Length: 361
Image (cartoon, rainbow, N blue to C red; front, side):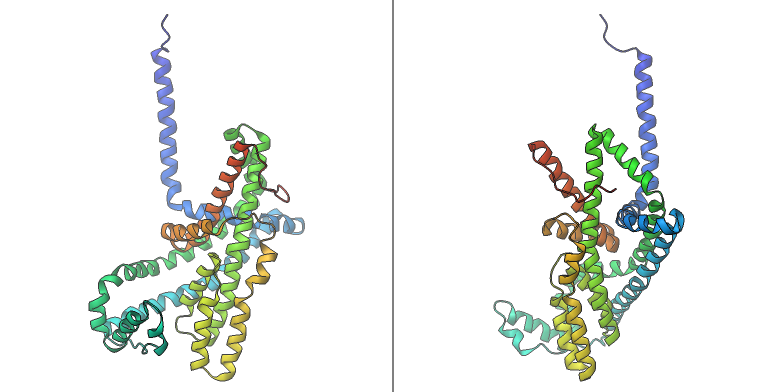
């Protein structure tokens, strides 16, 4: 008995597969250039949807989404433009001074030589840079070529990153307006994958809880803290306020104390500024640096615990992959992947998954 399917059925199946592959390829070409923006927009939509539901009761669905989009763009645009402009200006001034041989570097502090193992070498290198920059560049230029190229390329992408944030908030406002339909689509998709309606609802709720927990408790706290500290940097007129604010943001996301940046800056301000202004700056900066102790219990309480190495890898990988946008998107996406993997492993072993306060989409 011949078990082979008819040739016409085989050709028909091949035609179907080919058309589906062609459609996937055509859609992928359109979506891939804006995949990062769409992912960050989806994260913002999940984060803002509870607020939208409260506002929609009074304003209506469309007006609530429009208000969230406008406020989000306004609140994000001003600090991002200030920080991006300051970073670009600082890096441009650095390279300009290097080309014109007009860069001045203070001598190394005497105590640097007392640091074990590396103190003497650091003092010699610092003294060479402070006294003869051309010779220092000739000696250490090969080591600095890679970081310098990365700085230049990062500066060129700052404007695009700011535009990506604006577009993300605008798209997120549209997604929020159709939040119920988007949640239903996600549940149907996961139900098709898992074969269980209950499991699909649980995975949607778990994903939403993880996004809100990491976006608020990690990225949100870091952004608020860095904005508070950065306001002091800009108010006192630090020449590299944007770079210092960005460094504070990085430390905050990887959950390292911001005092690593703020304490040296406070010491510099106390040594160079008027006493009254320096004391006010010190009090403000130290208070802002400790603000995460108050913000984290308030904003992280509803989230799910994600190990710090997962957040760190997400920050580094996100920055390398998508620049400034990836800095925020990377830890959230990696945390979602980690939590879903743990949930799958627990289901395989018959254990209960992470507990969620309420399964809202």
